[in-house]
Amino acid sequence: MAYYVGMLAPHYTHFYPRRPVDASHPEAVIDFNRCILCELCVRASRDVDGKNIFAVQGRGIQAHLVVNTPSGKLGATDFSIRDKAAQVCPTGAILTKHRGYEIPIGQRLYDRKPISVVGDVATLSESKGGRRHD
View: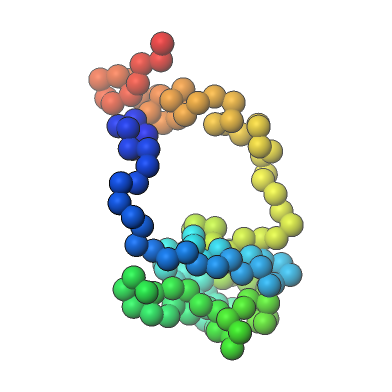
């Protein structure tokens, strides 16, 4: 939607800090920048896996996901990629190592045609907010 109304770049500075990527585990990578603090991994680790690996620390804009180890690194835990906590992340903050794109770059839907031709807006009539394809 923002693309179609000309909002191509943010007008205000971002409030969130840049967070590190933890690649210390042999099977998984955690990109803390992707985390939306939904706490699904925290609850799955505690309630389903019985491991208590993740927690949310801080309040407000300072809140962030942490790994419950003295070093704060995932590699220092008994986390497994088969744990429920690894499967529930809705944003992909917990990524599996050694696995690429399921559809190779260049063959994906938006690699072949622009979003204005194959996206959701392309299927709508012009009277309902869709775009004309000339």
